[in-house]
Amino acid sequence: MKPESFSNGTPTLDPVKFFGGHTHSTGVLESRSGKPSERITTQTAGVYANGILSMEQDLHSENSKPTHRNFKLTIIDAHHVDATGSDVEGTAHGELYGNYFTWSFRLKVADKGLVKHVNMTQCMYLMPDGKTLIIWSIIRKLGIVVTEITEQFHKDD
Image 1: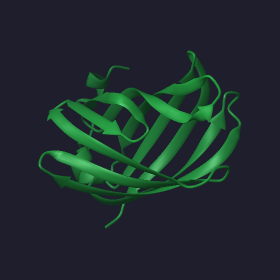
Image 2 (image 1 turned 30 degrees about the horizontal axis):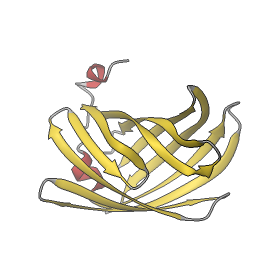
Image 3 (image 1 turned 45 degrees about the vertical axis):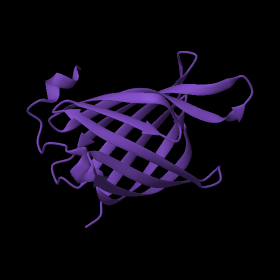
Image 4 (image 1 turned 180 degrees about the vertical axis):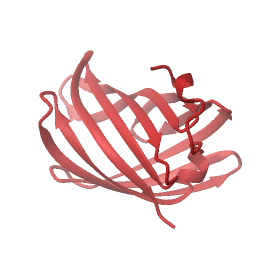
């Protein structure tokens, strides 16, 4: 489906409103065969100033050391968002319509031989309560799906 298909989706997802303040998530990574391989959790704090949402995130996974990441989101217009991040190569460009947000970008990975980057696509859906965001991520290496991640983010009050 095209992002525009979600134009009438409610409630409307506002990344600044949702990720400003504190959020937390739980999720699961699935191997290429669809087998759950690892559970993850995050704690994220976002601050909006001077047109930029700055986010700091701590990621914990069962099979790796905790990781700290940061992101800077800029709302370009009603339907476009750009972002940079500590593990994003270049700039991520996203589309935002109704309760849906999607983007694709190159994700830096730890030094594991020749592959230094993977391609990630994320689809985000704001649930009717306005405080829950489901994120489905697909990670591809050399064009092949190697991991899918399903995460549920909650807006802390």
